[in-house]
Length: 299
Picture (cartoon, helix red, strand yellow):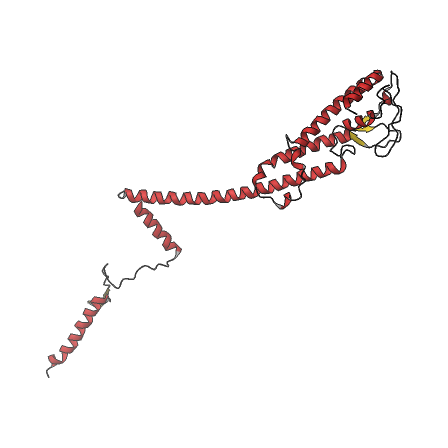
């Protein structure tokens, strides 16, 4: 075996190794003088061993991918794709606005329900206070134009103007137009100052005293009650809450335009007018005038 025959397998192996390196892109050293230069074999774009992008990439990579996709779709060379992207973007914004609107509407409904409950609670409290402290003992209703009797014992009991007038004139003798028996308080039976039969009469003999404090409170609270009930009028169609279970049956009639409120306003107006007229003419009224007033009151 010659020396050339021994080198032939070695050369064959070197050629096979170089060929393998070229196929796999392994760096191949090249000698230039006393230096060795490593060259990198770039893989072709169509290499089957190329690594595909990971679907579970980081948010930063995903953001850049979306930006690249958006830039591609908004390419002026692709107007249809740009319109498609614009339509998709507007649809997403519209969906987001609808969700926000639904959340705001839900909050508004909850707030409205809370306000309704607060107004109903306020109306019940006002009505309860009026019934407990300002109920007329003669008509068992909220006092309209409250007046007290000018009793010698200073009883201080207060009644509606129309009620106390009817109580007093019910003791009047129709034929002679005079009080032959003493008028007393319907609660404590304190005697009222006697009315002189013939005029002129002094002012201190007027048997009725206006209770201005009770009148101011009643007027104010009745107005607040009507306002509170009018604001809860919109919530009639909602489901009944726990706050509405204990609502008195007469309470809705005290809203603006309700039957109870109309009757109270009528009694207050008539009572004030009749008391004012009676006090203005008290010193010169005759028994015939008292008898006519008794007939007008229907007692």
